[in-house]
Image: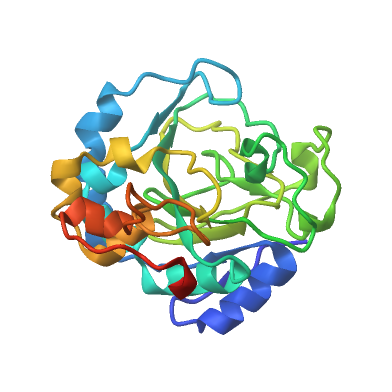
Length: 275
């Protein structure tokens, strides 16, 4: 089964229909080249300072550089991309709210082996979520062209309904080949993995993922984004970072204050009955 490619003008409802069916698809050229270049430039010193992974899964020749919201103002356009947020809301509609789960530039260096095929939702301590309940909506934005040779992400489309297994192999997958600025959209249930880089260039992707707001975030946004930086962000971005009530009574501050009010220094108690 091949990956569906849709144009950047595709309607969110159409995108969600494909995502619901296949658990993965590519939206071609969703970000313009200028945005991609600015993110790359802003993150370059941080990527350079990032050590490679310490195990085979992380990639011993792969750098994973986070804290995008604090380090790269240009990345906010992708973190809050309206099409992605619309589709994410549709996929995770059974939860009261969703939040930013992680932001990470993934740089796979030359001569890197492929990553083991896995599900991202296994990060939640391998909890067996119901087969019809999605807790994650994920993106990988291509900061460089993705090809099969340079390590394009490998995906098993339609694998969201398969049982948990560590035995899936790269032979079952297809490469998410796409041009810089394109976006691989996939769920937490789909089997996938970083491809083997057999080229002489580094493959760079920007992993931005979202999860339902009653689960813990993989990247601790409250520490990754210092308070002095957070205070300069919009309320919408802050809610996405986690400054919101995740469900009934989840995440309030001291005397039942909304976390956004607590950050801004405003007063006023919440009423649980209004949630």
